[in-house]
Length: 484
Ligand code: NAD
Image 1 (tube, rainbow, N blue to C red):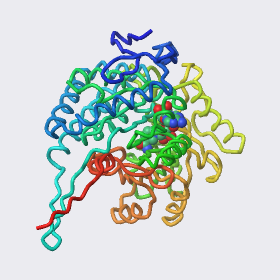
Image 2 (tube, helix red, strand yellow):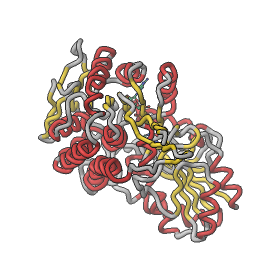
Image 3 (tube, helix red, strand yellow):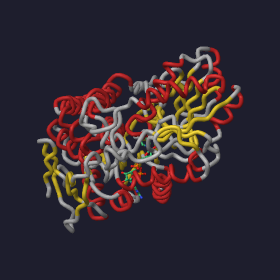
Image 4 (cartoon, protein in one colour):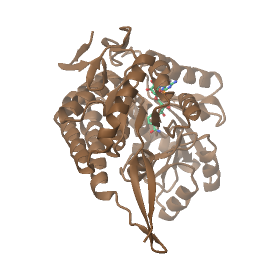
């Protein structure tokens, strides 16, 4: 099966290498299922060493031509891809929701428009923002230029497949690199549609290649390839260690965007409705959001009021078919993942933690639906207190003073994000300054500006993406010194 038809949208499930659709040499495939109802969506080409090497070779061959293409022309093509995304927004939204179970309403109004924005943003960056004055050293000029690095290996996860992939593809292409994108085997379909859109926009063959396959096979072969000049990876900490090891063997620069266990602080002087609304949002995408504030710290004096309002709102969440605009929470991505989430919950209960909400699969819906869950009485150093669950499972702690909650929030091997709610602006500034996190949201959540750095402190990542941080990573930044 090389063509899957999902809600009327045809998706070619072969690799896209050198501007051609190709099967794996041995004809092998893997199955891709719909999280909402378990049906088989597609059999997708299962790449290995031969296909990873073919994709890198195609990208290498296309590199000199693309690197020499004038920035204005590269920007024009990126904008044409963005237009193509806009044109196919509904198709992309339906296929993405069918493939990864995230809400159609988020895909329609937030995520897929952001995919187009990723391309437009880096097209603008390339043509408008990339300028640096020469330095003068005793009459010599130091001219800084951004040379493309070469072939980039881009590895993306399943929780926001096309958005996170294009957050890498767009800056890498803008900088003049050629890329091999390896999407997650749990959500491989929209990467294939991106290849169609890029080809229709006129992107030359070999500039964007899509390698399908299993992480330990296609992904591992790709990141180990000595001709790869940059590796950008978004995924889990254990996989990142393997990727970093492969990168170390070739001394390939690597960018890592990883998991988290973000703290969510609510002070007694906070706007409680705002804090509760944002706390319930941490269940978005069935908790499969790297940034999710899964450790909620509420000041003791407002604990009961916060909890009552939280439970009321959380109980009103509608769980069900992600293709339904009215749904608030969809399914987990995969049976293996659901079992992993449930394992955390079962072990926490056995260790004495108390369930205040949910605590298991949604039996009425069956399948991969897990009830939004809230725990209290969780030992902060226990498994549930410290590990990323990546499901709809939150933990409620209390605190009595600022020093105590800052210490507790920072007592983590992660440092992706932190959220804090307070009515005191001075406290907001002070506490934000003390929290160890690459992004701190004060009295808000999820507001992003693509010019700003995004990444993770500690084991939540290495490097930053966004604006100049992405661009610099994908370039060999060069200084040319010229005598008077
Ligand atoms: P994962 O680590 O299992 O897989 C990520 C990608 O790596 C997939 O494409 C997979 O096929 C590939 N892969 C697996 N083994 C590989 C190997 N040995 N070599 C090369 N590639 C390999 O992660 P996941 O389950 O897909 O995603 C969930 C994780 O991603 C969570 O930890 C989440 O917090 C994190 N995440 C982080 C961000 C961020 O921006 N910081 C964003 C989204 C998700």
